[in-house]
Length: 170
Image (cartoon, rainbow, N blue to C red; front, side, top):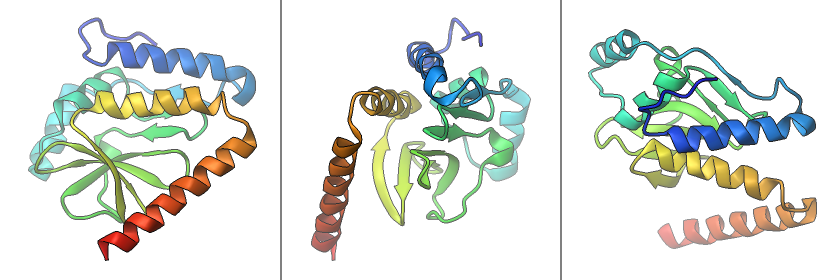
């Protein structure tokens, strides 16, 4: 895959491509794919049809690739033809999934910020798509360095923290 030189996501894209390549031995060479970029016309047509602007940092991603999968469901992102608003608040547009467990990645129609949304709750907000990609990079780097027992313990702590946080918000 060729990364456009003037792409603001160049460093993150190159790191993700490197992680995909390194993961081939464990997951196979079909565990990651990156389709052709999305045309400016397709992005503009979606924006006009929906009355919503695609955030510029996600347009940068779409100029690199349309639909893609990063290391066997670590993350999947879509082009405008696959965007949807199922199972999320009206203000959000779903552009992909992360962690392979149903966590959705969205952007806000109003602010253009990116939101991770899981089981009816926001799970993180980011100003630019670069920061979403950095989460994926950290996830893959940590994923390769933790034992299965450590991963289970980490997930238990995350779930306990979420339950505690939900209890405080009631």
